[in-house]
Amino acid sequence: MPLVNMKPLLRHAMDNHYAVAAFNLVDYNTTKAMVKAAEGLNAPVICQTSSKTIKYYSHKEIVSWVRTVAEDSPVPVVLHLDHCHDLAMIEECARTGWTSIMIDASELPFEENLAQSLKVREIAEKYGVGMEAELGQIMGVEDDMVVDEADSVLTDPEDAKRFCDALDLSAFACAVGTAHGFYHGEPNVDFDRIAAINAATKTPMALHGGTGLSDETFAKAIARGAAKINISTNLKHVWVKSFVDYHLANPKDFEPLRVGDAQYQACKAMFAGFIEKFGGKDQGAAFLSSQMQAA
Image 1 (tube, rainbow, N blue to C red):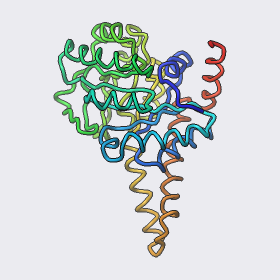
Image 2: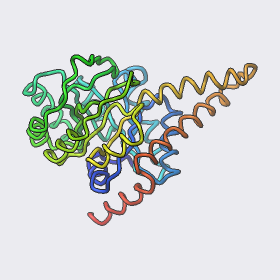
Image 3: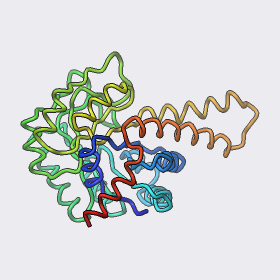
Image 4: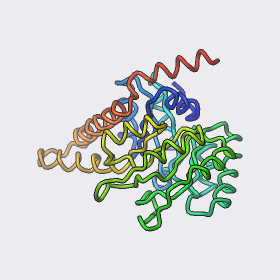
């Protein structure tokens, strides 16, 4: 089926107390694996791209991968641009086929962040795509953005309301104690803050820094309004480790397709595990049914 807009999908997730898994694709193989994993569970999925992935390949290549696997699939698939502060890249993504875009101006003071985000709101409206924006600074490393723990700033619920009221977002990314990358020590997720922000904004929350969180943490966050959960670092490690493990187990096998299939199967299993953990099983059909009823 055609790629879908993220806004109604995340509203459905929030209203029905599940979260849509969002994975940062690495190549065509991982793109296919995440959609096929979702298909096996009749679940929606978000294929995300970082700025550096787009720069390495191209807008045209990435759109062709995602459209190819999505158009042959019965489940809802979103193509989303993850953390980006380049307005030209954001518009190019919206123009060439992404169905959701994210502006990350969270390093700026509130008013400057809002001003930048309002420019992206115009882009989203121009092309009819979903939009995510961020307030507060999530610690860790994401693409070329580095935020030390000392510099991280948790999101204030009142500021969050002002921000979301002005932007009509599909997803709101905020700092609630999670971190990009692997955790060093026990993460200190502020569940009361998640609940307060969602009560104030009524906007589906995007929980960044999903790699390494416990099942209990995911469940508590989803129950309090997290509707999109990002997984990136975990994918990178499985992608590399599956390649290495296959070669160590089969040192004389230099057939690329067998190595590629080992990566595909390992990534697909990981994707399926997160999708099911977030409550996405059978929500693909439920979402599509809700859209038909609303039409």
